[in-house]
Amino acid sequence: MRTEAGRVADSLPSGGAGEGPREGALSRGTLRPELLLVLALSLGASALSSLISFIGSLTRPGGLKDQAATLNGSYAPGRPWLDLAWQLFGIATALVPVLLVAHLLTREGAGGLRSMGFDRTRPWPDLGRGTLIAAGIGSAGLAFYLGARAAGFNLTVVPESLPEVWWKFPVLILSAIQNSVVEEVIVVGYLLRRLGQLGWTPMAALVASSLLRGSYHLYQGIGGFIGNAVMGVVFVLLYRRWGRVGPLVVAHALLDIVAFVGYALLAGKVGWLPTA
Image (cartoon, rainbow, N blue to C red):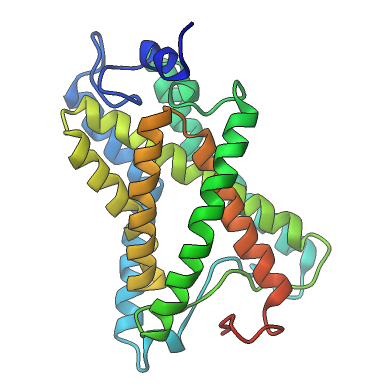
């Protein structure tokens, strides 16, 4: 009987987890600008925006921990229906690069997002693995954030500042799912595949993926950069082991849901949770 890894390997380029070149693949001259364009439309642009934001925080009077980085805020204060429309618009448009990646991989003949294990073929293993990852990373990540903020290396992260309206928690959950899908599909599945096809070594690709993940969290401070870069290393290693981004999407979604919803429920009610 074929193992999961064996089935994945049969459908992907050599090199493991969709990272290596395959016969008949697009030329490097085509892949390189494609990769740059996808990143420019998604997480690469976020990384540059994050760097500019971090420079602004560094040059502002006062320490980093006295400043706040809000993740989910209102777009139309005092106008809940308009605010909801903007929230849903932002979530939907953020997913467009994922659809672009799916189109590019399908056109290439790679099987679309299935080639990176983002499908419904193994829902329960993906859910179980993702839950275990989230449990392991969540507690360590919270402790690292609190320590980095106390040391002055991090801004105060405000996961949400939405008004108390009926759609608050559904939007927070949708936002968490959107973040997880965009990041894991692009910065793990797609990026590793394309870097492998461009001839990057597995170690170089791991470093690039992890640094990219850290860089678009730099707006949170040095702690946000380091913590997410380390998480990136773990996620790449797990992806190479399992050949699926499904568990990573689940883990990331659970981490963000707990952060967003937990903050909404606990902010101002417990002393250990920093607020702006």
